[in-house]
Image 1 (tube, rainbow, N blue to C red):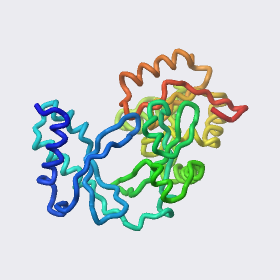
Image 2 (image 1 turned 180 degrees about the vertical axis):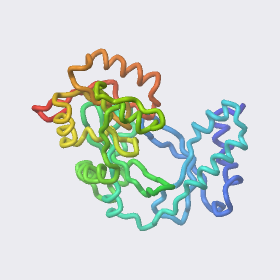
Image 3 (image 1 turned 90 degrees about the vertical axis):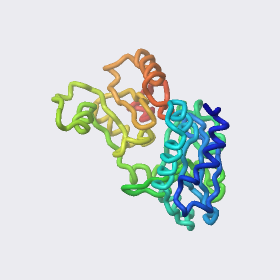
Image 4 (image 1 turned 30 degrees about the vertical axis):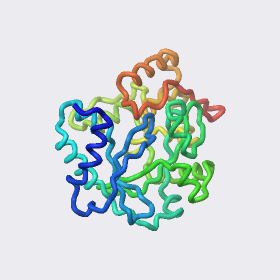
Length: 291
């Protein structure tokens, strides 16, 4: 079995054998990428004629895990090449500050677990979390490409973290509508063929967005939290179940310390590493109107 460095070198040397002819003049590079809660090595297929290069990537770390699980190297290379080909997007070389300002959203991440990411990205602190900014380069029904805005990108367009925050706050709820619903209603929506009777006796709610991805950021909207407080009729706890959503429960229904212990165990054993948000439980105070 190849060691990781040997595997990486082999992949770099052979991947173009599996790619369509149009990639023959592209370069193959490996770049370290600070993803949420982890650092990975990305296999990047670079178009030398594009100035703003958001190339399709696959992660060598993930490929190597498949290799260790006895998937053949040719099959791994074939799958990687198909992924690159299918996700290749002809990026408009005129991407400019206007495009960024119209398509940047914010994402909440754990500050302690993302020190490397935050060292190279404009951000704002919030509780034990950090707000970073994702530029949605292209999104439609079939293809999606986005990237966390780095210091390099922010400097290029002369934008500060405060300016990016204002831009993202206007965009996030416009691009992906917020969704707040009782957990029973959520289950019934996802499994309509076997509905559960909902008499609203289960006071557990989910706050996310319409695509259920990176929707925990809606706790940054004061008006959304105020409306939830009015609907529940009391203050509530915010349980950061993942970067994709938070759980909302009225304060009189749970013990915060016990819930915090449960959350820590769930994050350790169930939630995917790249989706973990925090081990802390937050309280929304209706009088102060803040978490």
